[in-house]
View 1 (cartoon, rainbow, N blue to C red):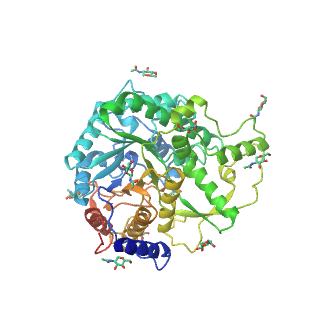
View 2 (cartoon, protein in one colour):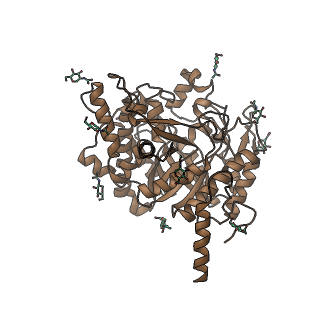
View 3 (tube, rainbow, N blue to C red):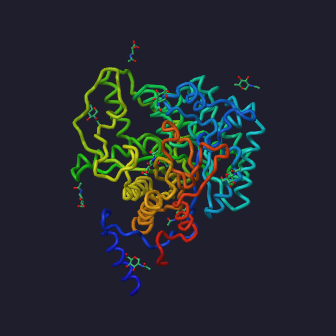
Amino acid sequence: MKTTILLVSTFLLLVQARYEDDYVVNNRTFPKGFKFGTASAAYQIEGAWNEDGKGENVWDRSTHLYPEKNSNATGDVTSDAYHKWEEDVELLKGLGVSAYRFSIAWSRVLPKGFANESNPAGVTYYKNLIAGLKKYNIEPLVTMHHWDLPTALEDLGGFLNSDIQEWFVDYARFLFETFGDDVKEWVTFNEPKQTCDQGYGSGVLAPNIVSLGIKNYICGHNLIIAHGKAYRLYDKEFRAKQQGRVTMVVDSNWFEPASNSTEDVEASERSLLFTYGWFAHPIVYGDYPEIMKVRIANRSKLEGFNSSRLPSFTDEEKQIINGTADFMTVNIYTSSVAQAIPEPDITPLDPKRDLDIGAHIYQPDDWEKTITDWFKVVPWGARKLVKWISDTYGHPEIIITENGYHDNGTVINDLNTRGRYYKLYLSNLLDAIYYDNVNLTGYMAWSLTDDFEWQYGYNIQLGLYHVDFSSLNRTRTPKESSTYYRKVVTTSCLVDTCVE
Ligand SMILES: *[C@@H]1O[C@H](CO)[C@@H](O)[C@H](O)[C@H]1NC(C)=O
Ligand SMILES: *[C@@H]1O[C@H](CO)[C@@H](O)[C@H](O)[C@H]1NC(C)=O
Ligand SMILES: *[C@@H]1O[C@H](CO)[C@@H](O)[C@H](O)[C@H]1NC(C)=O
Ligand SMILES: *[C@@H]1O[C@H](CO)[C@@H](O)[C@H](O)[C@H]1NC(C)=O
Ligand SMILES: *[C@@H]1O[C@H](CO)[C@@H](O)[C@H](O)[C@H]1NC(C)=O
Ligand SMILES: *[C@@H]1O[C@H](CO)[C@@H](O)[C@H](O)[C@H]1NC(C)=O
Ligand SMILES: *[C@@H]1O[C@H](CO)[C@@H](O)[C@H](O)[C@H]1NC(C)=O
Ligand SMILES: *[C@@H]1O[C@H](CO)[C@@H](O)[C@H](O)[C@H]1NC(C)=O
Ligand SMILES: *[C@@H]1O[C@H](CO)[C@@H](O)[C@H](O)[C@H]1NC(C)=O
Ligand SMILES: *[C@@H]1O[C@H](CO)[C@@H](O)[C@H](O)[C@H]1NC(C)=O
């Protein structure tokens, strides 16, 4: 009884602790069985872009055709993980992690995208990697699509062609059949918001198609149904035998209300629903968030479209996608503020997705910055976001599938930058576990090594291990943050001494 009273009062004290300057790093331990790992993606680390029968994907093409869109850089070689995977597995072993999130390059195993023609050398590469991980009891968490669609499929319309639903199911079947005895955690798609908003909206990412507010929604729609169909395939043909789990990786900022006014609080909620909810609502509840459907339909009508720019699911599709996340995930790096604004102007037939949200989204100048202007260090935002996910989706199990800090890649003694970032974000996530009752069961640090960072090329880096991109050997050197992360992973504790 006494213990209970003591616990309750400690609880209140800590809940009241403010997030800002007086924030005290949580000195509890992560729950037993908590999965620490690191994350990566095929195009960012593998290199060997045209070796051993690999087909071309949209990133190969974008970096070769449009160097100016990609900081004049390519992933042709990058950190050369295709040849150096054994070394990377040793690094993972050294960190003591129990999980590694990586992606399979679709065009490395199915060079033309279709499942009727596979590439044995590509299959062998991933078989070896998976076996290497399992030898050290490191669980593979495998992403099927991390932005690198085979160009053979892009040429047929990519995510804008509803046939992609079947192409993806065939690919998923191939992966379940080929790797499913050893892989128990599957991610269908990584950050579909970026795939669609940036790949088929702003055009910043491959395949660099520009169509703000129209094609990005079509992309999202086909992608969600493709996910649902792959999930049902697993249910029907593989789950009983393979006993694994399937989900999607969704990314989001936390959107802090600009004030406590009802309007700003609603703007925050709306921003979360248009960002995280765009994909999470369909796969958890079977349809887009109501506010998304209503706002886009309204604006489409006023803009002169005959129907909503947001496609709608048929009843059959709703059934297919409803309840297709075996656990939930989130990639979080930073946060923003959402402020209510008067209803944005209508421009006839020239929609913008940002205006669909109907909020002014920004990052205050006085938030701690990094070397890029979109990335502020906001540790408390991570706690609020996972709590929102937990509250909004019925207290699901959640895994942080990416989180990390970027700098210009030259800094080895990064204990007070990257190391501190990890400490503060992890501490806020631990607060969410202990004080907000969030069922957070894993954390994948982005990233194991430095890599090709998409449109930023090699100008920003997030690795725990530095890669010398000017050496043929692509030499890996531990950064100080890797020492800190190893300590966290091996002790489950963020500070020198933890209470039990
Ligand atoms: C890429 O190279 C071109 C030509 O050399 C140069 O003008 C441009 O500034 C470079 N862009 C970046 C982002 O480095
Ligand atoms: C594989 O399937 C595609 C699409 O149906 C077809 O165009 C192609 O000819 C097939 N390739 C082989 C080797 O059967
Ligand atoms: C909103 O209210 C909370 C608690 O009442 C307070 O701590 C916070 O500072 C307020 N936020 C703003 C932006 O005024
Ligand atoms: C999704 O399934 C739940 C539980 O069966 C059901 O209550 C809900 O109505 C379904 N959603 C849709 C959009 O059909
Ligand atoms: C949608 O349009 C209807 C009719 O014009 C209006 O009453 C409603 O407030 C609008 N809803 C939203 C969320 O914009
Ligand atoms: C709306 O429908 C009419 C008649 O079918 C068609 O002529 C017009 O191009 C359509 N407009 C848009 C914006 O889709
Ligand atoms: C967290 O989720 C897992 C998997 O669903 C479940 O086994 C576990 O009991 C949950 N833990 C809590 C504290 O809710
Ligand atoms: C990279 O950042 C570090 C630390 O901020 C700085 O000392 C260094 O000059 C920067 N290097 C380049 C090439 O910008
Ligand atoms: C290549 O790099 C690894 C570390 O990544 C290092 O252990 C090895 O000595 C290097 N080999 C050469 C030939 O430089
Ligand atoms: C853990 O943190 C609490 C609250 O800040 C503090 O009272 C306690 O002394 C700390 N325990 C250890 C072992 O550091």
